[in-house]
Image (cartoon, rainbow, N blue to C red):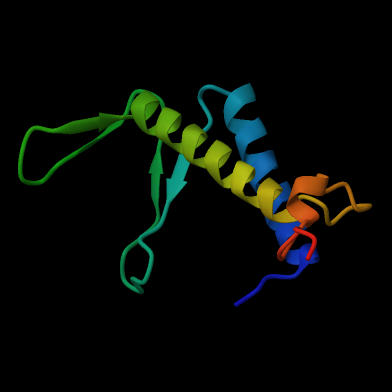
Length: 105
């Protein structure tokens, strides 16, 4: 499904706001839900807390997950910006506008 420019702009704005919040406040809680699950409660991870595997002693602490989330947000922002490139005022580089066979017969 192709998303509209308005939808992409809204998503981009939300991603940027979330990233800004995490970058400004190093103690902001991380909120998670389990996708496609109707019974799993939301999980809120705060500074000083960690997730521990039920099968091993593996721990994912707050700071590690915060950094993962920040990098994921940056990646998603870059992807949305790429999709929106050229949609505002025709600012797409000429290399992206060329198509077909450009040779003369």
